[in-house]
Amino acid sequence: MVDDVVKGPASYFPSIEKKYGRPIKEWQELVRQRLPAKHMELVAMLKSDHGMGHGHANAIVAYTLAKEVK
Image 1 (cartoon, rainbow, N blue to C red):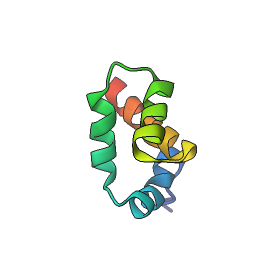
Image 2 (image 1 turned 60 degrees about the horizontal axis):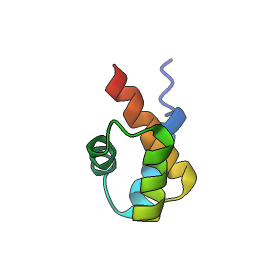
Image 3 (image 1 turned 45 degrees about the vertical axis):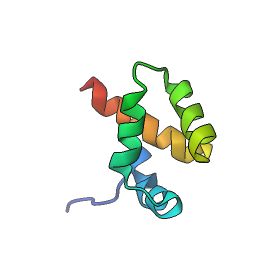
Image 4 (image 1 turned 90 degrees about the vertical axis):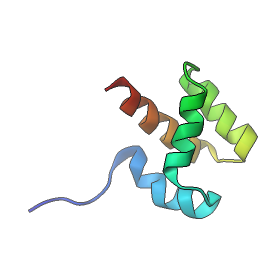
């Protein structure tokens, strides 16, 4: 049986899109535009510039950076 439960940072994505009104791809692009900034600098940017909560900001940054490395 296939387990379709989303885990990790991506599990936050539906609530992020609902709460902040933008698709995840847009948030990821904002993060990519700031590279090579450090993880916590990117989290701080999302929090200060866009009013995002820490957990949501951290999830977007962690997911985006993990995809950039591959």
